[in-house]
Length: 376
Image (tube, rainbow, N blue to C red; front, side, top):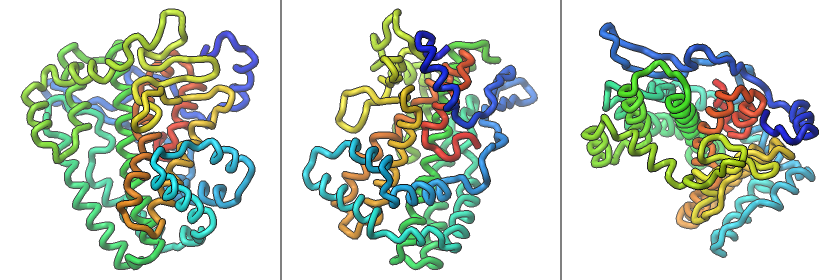
């Protein structure tokens, strides 16, 4: 059990169980493809039977979240009061201006523009022509993820088209740019999340691969995380393909050394329970911080999700704020640093929860990712 020493807390969790997806594990939870010679070619995330309505996506979530934010409810105010602030005075001022504009100056009806829905639907369709976001690994094709550079051209096309329809000076166009950026980020976050689950399975289960194949899978996973324009790093990875992934995984887990003691409840070496909290040592709390990040709060199961939604809304406010980009960029980076990498890393936590049949907890990890397409 997740909190085996706290029966009352477990009862409360049972009542608050997140919307579930099946955790039933077949021989292996991902689609595996081999060629006629038996060579492992692809491991992909299967299309899931979504329990969510069709409109629950980045735009749908944004509409709902912004409506709640502008309502000035006590819960929103309480959450906002606990929101961290940047150390730099100018950045603090920009953030406060962004929040005020989003709450009082932005017309929420902008999100009801049918043209926004139409352009966003077209954008998603074109983005998904770059068929890499369900690909978790391509062990025998070292350059499989090099096509990711294509997304740059696709984004230029969809943004240009939307500009001609919405008008580049309109708030709807700025919102469109934001939601497209968030959609691509959500696709990448989903892929890395489940890649991390795959890494857990490779290390802890009878995955249907040889030891050599496992090493090549790891190489493909970590290669996919290199920026497409970082050609020297990609070339170096290709030359060391047989061991590249093993080396990168060891480096990734290194900060977690000594984080978990033998007496503590843990999920791998980077996630552990401290009282009611599950802490993450793999990714810090925020930029320039050495503090651990929070992955789950048993007393307030939606806490992590709500915080991340607030960070995303703040980023929208910064995006819409009519001030020079030079003033906005540092704040956007600071806000992103508090959830983007954290939610990707939690695929490790999810992987261990699934292995241990902690179904309720695994669903909370999905919910708290604040990624509206994580279950799709």
